[in-house]
Amino acid sequence: MNISARPSDLAQPATRREWLAVLARSPHASMKQAMDAALGADSAPEFDWLRAPDIGLAMVRGRVGGTGDAFNLGEVTVTRATLRIRSGVGRAVVGMAVHMGRDKERATLAALADALLQIPAFEARMQQQVIAPLAARIDENRLHNRARAAATKVEFFTMVRGD
Image (cartoon, rainbow, N blue to C red; front, side):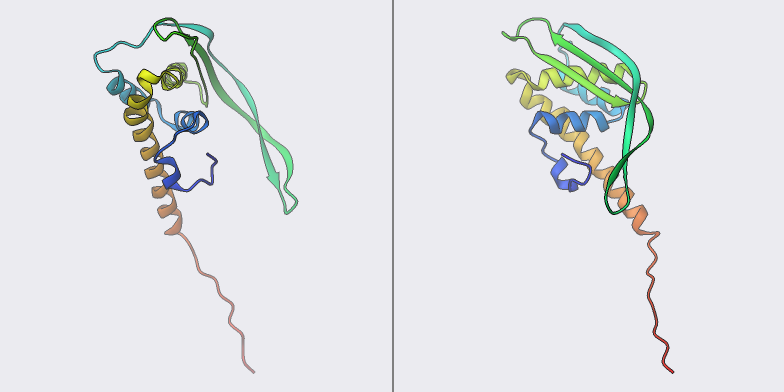
């Protein structure tokens, strides 16, 4: 999934790349609410940290001009986390998360969601109750932003003077 993906493409993410993109773009409160709904009375499975949530910087690159030459635009704060589900799945399942900002709990929730999405027993429930609603919300926000931008569009035209 890329930034220019059509909004309808976000409605049914299936691959790990797509669900990681949805998790990275989702706000903390929405993600927590969706995870609580998906896990219900079940508590989150136990896990071990491979990389506890930590905050760092990442260089953001941009492109300029018609040639698309890359340049360093600046740095952004990112939080990343990697965990491994402890037991009960028969194999080592590793979940990871990276997102812009300084929210360690959000990184934990995203890494846990990533790990659970890789476990067949949880996959359908997580897709339906976490990824689909979060993708729909991203979709909704994108459409709202497009509508706001369209409202400011100005039509310019050139009129030829006749002599």
